[in-house]
Structure formats: C-alpha cells, structure tokens
Image (cartoon, rainbow, N blue to C red; front, side, top):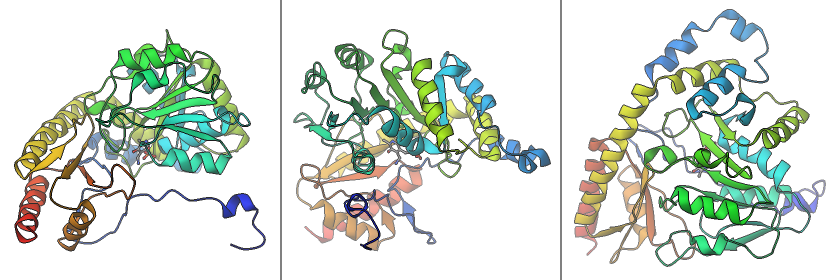
Length: 360
Ligand code: PMP
C-alpha cells in the first residue's frame, strides 16, 4: 500500500462480487441474475426516450420513478429514496444512519457480505449474531439486543446466501423491540416468496426497507434500487446524496425502471416461473443426494454429505458452470446456485450427476 494512503485505506478489505466472465456457453448460476430478461417495455421505453433525455441533466429527484414506486407500494413519494442499485442505496444508509462512534451495527454472522465491507469503509463497529442451527435468524436474539443501544440492525430478508425468510410477524417483533434505532431490511430477493416489511412501516417508523430491480425485474445491468422509509429518514438520505452531488440515476435508467415497475403482468408471470423452477431444481438436487435449505429467493443453498463443496464448485467450473462457493466457517460445505431456466437446471444436474459418479 502506498505511503500516501491513510491506514484506514490499508485496512479495507474490498467486497468481492461474484465473477462476471464473458465467455461463450458458460452457464452463469453464481450471481443471482434473473433467467428471463426484463419486460420488453423497458427497451421500448429506453428507445422512445427523446433527445432531451440525453441532452439535459437527469431529474435529480427521479420524481417519475419515485411516484411509480410510491404507487406500487402504497406509500408517499417522500418516503422513497432512489439509487444506482441497492448497493448505492445501502452506502448512503451506512454513511448516514449507522455512524455513531463506538455503537456497533448488529447483523447476523452469515448475511450479505457487503455489509461488513461498508462497516470497514465507514468506520462502523460491527457486532454479529450467529444464525441458529438450522441457519435461520433467531428472532429472540434481536429483541432487546446487546448493547442496549446499537447504531442499528441490518439483515437481508430472505437472507443471503441461505435463502431462508423471516415472517412479517418476526420482523415486527425485531422492529418494535428496537424502536430507537434504524432496522434495515434488505429485500433484494423478497419477490420470490417472502412478504415485504413495507407493510409494517406505519406501525414501525424505524424500519428502512431496501429493494432492487436487479433480481425480480431482471435489470442488474441498469443499476436501480430504492429504499422505502419514513419521510424523516428519506429526507436525511436525500441530504446525504445531494451532499455528494451525485445523481441518483441516469435518465435512461429512470425511464427503463418506470417501465419495468409498471409491467405488473410480466413481473408476476416471470417471478412465478422462477419460483416453480426453484421448487423443481430443489427436487432434482435432493434426488442427487443434496440437502437443500428452504429458499424463498431466486437461488438455493445446497450441500452434499459426501462431496466437498469447494471441489464440486471447481469441477462444475471445469464444465463451464459457475456456482458460488463461500470459504466461510459453517457454510463452506454449501453451494449457492442461482435459479436458471429448466434447460439450465438440467445441464447443471446432469453434470453434477456425472461428477458425483466419477468421484465416488
Ligand atoms: N442486497 C443483497 C442481499 C444482494 O444479494 C445484492 C446483490 N448482490 C444486493 C443487495 C445488491 O444488488 P444491486 O446493487 O444490484 O441492487
């Protein structure tokens, strides 16, 4: 590390996203993208965008998008905070809501790994709570957390990479037990079977619910996400964003995101298809001898009692199939596999079947 950097930079351990190689005939089941592509209305809307969409600066307040989100979720426009993907939304949340001296941010020990990266980046202490033996979040651990006043609480629901979801009743318990701190629920995968905590906002104003268009709307390449929270919290986040002098979204992303959110028929059809494919893949994997955790997401988390997960992941890769393996204690025998098309599942399972036979 260059002597010009501060110790703080030397200390950073950057987030490692799943690989994004661009090779032919590669089956990419490693970063939870949607197999079917976005609503055709998205490209149509982007193509129909006028010269002024490009000539002028974008709408800094992304009003059309915020109005569309507010109608979708039945909240006020002033309760919607947009960003370039939910990762950027989370960055503003960490920067704005969680920096309280030594007070730690509380989170499960196994969750979206980005949260720890942002803690390091923003100098936020972090306190992790182990998942239960069945890999679920144990609600009682978050009701009246130690220390008495953390900087906040954050978890994904469904959790990543387990895919296991909490019920709204459980989230309500956590939010009500910690009324003085923000409770951030990252709902990147919520549309594949869980319920959104946005429904609890009027009762629990400390909730901040984060959504992305990268997963169930199949728009990972467009970079659009948003948070829904109380007006007071969104007002603070807007001030942070404006202090960066950063635009929330470019003009074409705003136009495309609105079109995606408005096409509810396409959304329902494709996410239901992914849910059916998840159930089918779960059965196929179980037939091959895998244990599969109950997933409400567009991926499954599976392990084989007789085969090492790291080795399986390497062998799949040699066959042109990418899945995600984490070298993290307690979950290092699992593979996280994104739900693809039926043809993708068949290619994966046929390959796995060959590998399992050969290496027995
Ligand atoms: N939260 C979770 C739990 C995720 O898995 C991801 C995707 N890696 C994100 C947020 C970020 O998604 P995006 O920035 O594409 O909106």
